[in-house]
Length: 227
Ligand SMILES: Nc1ncnc2c1ncn2[C@@H]1O[C@H](COP(=O)(O)OP(=O)(O)OP(=O)(O)O)[C@@H](O)[C@H]1O
Ligand SMILES: [Mg+2]
Image 1 (cartoon, rainbow, N blue to C red):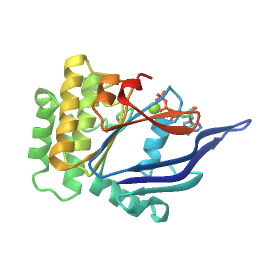
Image 2 (tube, rainbow, N blue to C red; image 1 turned 45 degrees about the vertical axis):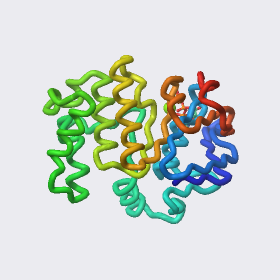
Image 3 (cartoon, protein in one colour; image 1 turned 90 degrees about the vertical axis):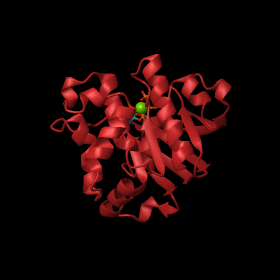
Image 4 (tube, protein in one colour; image 1 turned 135 degrees about the vertical axis):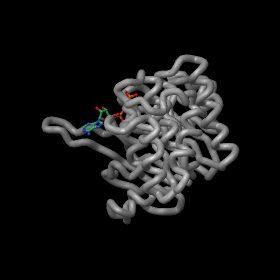
């Protein structure tokens, strides 16, 4: 589902160059769950953006579901994201002028699903927000916004879910509930999960754990994933 070969990313700033990723290789089978851990600033979010085709690598290749992202123009990348990807961004990126329900339903509706609003309502209920469907993002707490973002990213049962700290703002009980939702999706829809997390409990539930440190990616064990 994911293949990275010799992937490098650097940002050129006026007085220095930041080497975020140095020749990273990774192969993730369809249906696996993967946790990505590593210190703040190690490049976890950047790697997620590369996987989503929202950032272009400095060198190397990203292949998602057998498709090399390098050869795709912006329209084809948008098609790919709509059809097979779900993304939960670290800063959520909800549309402020749409209600929670609309944030979840509109992408589905654009993708041509007649039952978009019914499915969106159901998915909001799954993340415990049935009562908040008609509220705008500014009226919701950080954790509530995060759950709307998770509902939006999972409602179409994507083949690959990319999530940046999906339980980062949630209390223990809500976080556990959201974890169950993610692993249910993996089990029932065969969704590949790629989760950036600082939460050892979440990493421990994943099939594989990788640590990013000084631009290199290393496979580790869930027990060691406490960064
Ligand atoms: N657009 C950009 N221009 C320049 N530098 C950037 C840019 N985006 C990220 N960086 C730098 O790249 C490095 C990796 O950032 P990234 O956001 O991927 O880290 P992270 O592992 O997700 O951290 P956190 O755990 O704090 O979210 C950081 O040093 C950051 O300052
Ligand atoms: Mg980040």
